[in-house]
Image (cartoon, rainbow, N blue to C red; front, side):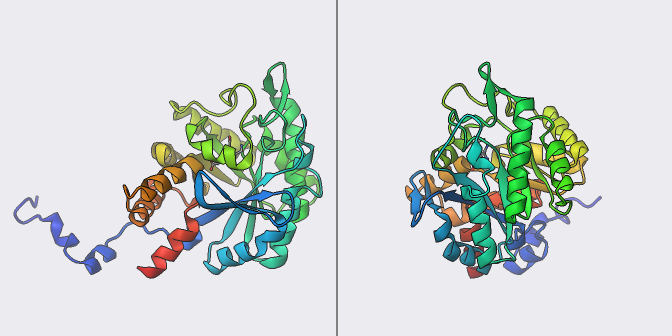
Length: 326
Ligand code: PBG
């Protein structure tokens, strides 16, 4: 056995070139997906106060943004909608002229090769802000399923490339797969938000998307942050129902979950570096308390090192610009 003084691990850290050669994890543009908030209306480009650098766009204002994203070699965007009207059954989530359906068509016209992922959920479209149909004070799983399926189908019809259900209902992947297949959308993959936790880190998103629940919270459908074995059961359920890819969300406080899912399953794995994670970095950087560039590179590298193949992040554009300048 070689030990000190023959063994010296610092030998391989001596120069930048050696460090580069033995680097185990490198985040690339191709790993990233950029979230976009689309608001119904015209002429809207409005910065989200708790998420500096992130805007809500109306569908007619998207072209410059998606050209920039595609120009940075980011392979895809994931869309979240802010409709003008909300009701008990989230009608605007599956309306053929809904805000997301308009946005998909507009993006596909501008940059046909940019992958368009859609968040399939009802919370932005319901008057009460919950992710499904409310009955007797709780979200009713089975009444929600057909609405989610209708929503996913309408996204596919508008031209979405991948649908990503984030509602956490049991059985949603199965009904979405069946619905898409019946309508000849067999080629559209499902990225399931499988292990989605009831997290405080979604705060800025809910402000951005106007989707905070009007009563109660989401703990009867999203997961308890204490649990990791349950996350594996959620992933197992979604894979059994036909998910092509699975997700852990949030990312940074759940690196152990990402790592466990990576070890046990072979499906492509996404991690969502959520709004609160972004807001924390931005706020500290604005105060001069953190070096934003180094912090972001370290965070995204850690998420990939834990086992994520795909990272959904609001930092995507900055990250690519910074890595190009290194
Ligand atoms: C919709 C949804 C949420 C996020 C993604 N999809 C909010 C929630 O569940 O309340 C959060 C994303 C983020 O915080 O960046 N259900």
